[in-house]
Length: 178
Image 1: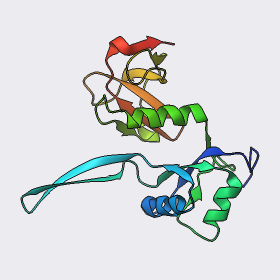
Image 2: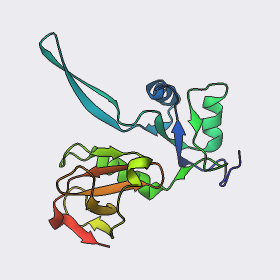
Image 3: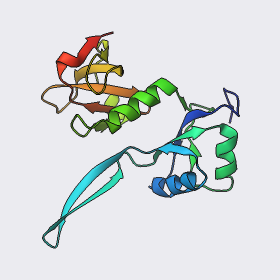
């Protein structure tokens, strides 16, 4: 594996936790006070006549980790529950701005629960003009405003290049062409 940055620089790394062990990886990272992010979605099911609600990872096997390469290696040494996603030989580093926008959109309360798009789904999207949210709780977040297959209206899309995208409904009055 080749490293394209300083191994002591704190960056966001896209990591994999095979076999749906992302929550175990999160517990390990939390125990070592390493910032991490796993987008979650709410699920509901009726069991014995009662509605049961829980959260689960929106896209399995993904964990975003914010630490230095050396710091992550100390924690994951000898463990297989956390692996760097490579592109093609070096770990994928997510730019700070993309990660900030992604987390901010995910954590916003003013909009519908976001829809997560996989790399395969992202390939089906038409590229439209980049836009920025000009007002409201998401002011300043940049992304794309375009139609998503299966949706009745256009969606605001924030993406982490080549990995994952998140789409949600945003009133067009808030959207400004960049």
